[in-house]
Length: 225
Length: 249
Ligand SMILES: N[C@@H](CCC(=O)N[C@@H](CS)C(=O)NCC(=O)O)C(=O)O
Ligand SMILES: N[C@@H](CCC(=O)N[C@@H](CS)C(=O)NCC(=O)O)C(=O)O
Image (cartoon, rainbow over all chains, first blue to last red; front, side, top):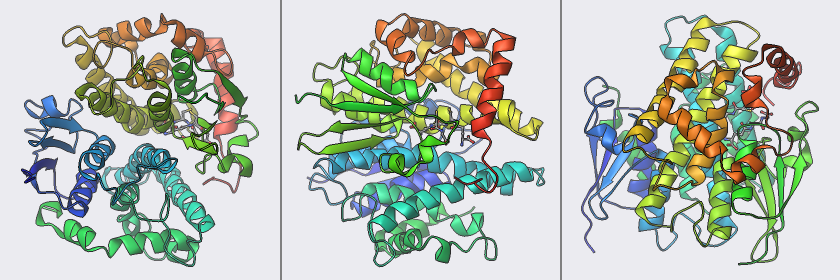
């Protein structure tokens, strides 16, 4: 079966399209990245017919005719359609259900809150809203602590462990993309996460070394313009 | 289909009632274990075994292999319930169908978009110890934008429900939040199609039953009653304010 390239809509270094690209790359699927202009395209037709929410990412898969949005939903679609051997997923139970718990946690608990921290720390014009910044720093630390405690229980301080079962899955990779901003959230001298949350650190650094991950993070399309 | 042995760990909140509404719509038997936020029960070690994130809802069930399974995150719970207990697709569509993909789109939209943003609107509008007008405006505006997306989607073609003309887990996930619009300071009257949908959902016996778990759902009446609102706010502030030294629990 030769596949036609899947179109992935993105915009520079914005995190959620990269999450989908990492998975496409890991699964060895052909894809093209189309950059969407924030001012002229994102909130207008024809893009909002693919994603009515006017956000990134979205995909169009010419092989199946599927056009869809929300990065978590897209990841589920990709593994269910193209990872039939279960290289990066489990089709067995209870693993497949636990994957969904950790994926929804990523989507609703990591992305939105870390995104708010970024906003108040780097983008918002009033830079003195410390109570808001502290709120989201604390939440990011709490979430990292939840991951660290979970991996520690599985032996993650001694050896790299993954969230579900005994291998890396698409759900670990879904967390990775936001994890990569940890040094911006907590610059040197603020919170020493490498010693404070060692199981988290092992997990994160191991994923960063994967060739598909390095390739995707380095793609020209995902760099700052 | 093996028989369920479900225990739902929950509290009276927009995320908690998603699970009980789905259970009622499916007519499944389940036990309820209410967690007390006041005593921070959701962060106790026994519960972290069920949800490592220390939040409700979560559920346990006996799995097909005879062992106990834990399911946390409301979106994951909804997906679990329909794929195990909805063979006749009462509130779902056949896996892999176009409709089922569209349901997943809106399910994630609620869980990753509307829930967190409306939750932040609640925080800055109601609970925040320091009043930050920018914070209030930022999250109320985003909540309104997201309501606008839902409103437009429903108005387009006069849809009764979000996907495929029937009530699915996408609608169930969204309802409790839309019913609480006023708490975030958002006026639902600005979104007529969404408002009509919210009332249509409320008329369903499953929604009516499930929303009152584990205690009566009084959000809609409360929003209209100033005195009641102050009382609820005072109670909520008690558990939302982290105890000193435990800010990041
Ligand atoms: N994304 C999660 C959100 C869960 C959530 O926010 N739960 C709140 C109640 S609505 C909670 O348990 N809060 C307690 C706390 O933060 O300690 C889900 O949908 O399950
Ligand atoms: N630790 C939370 C406590 C409040 C809480 O859990 N709120 C829930 C609603 S009851 C929430 O905003 N959940 C967000 C979501 O569902 O994504 C906070 O400070 O925001």
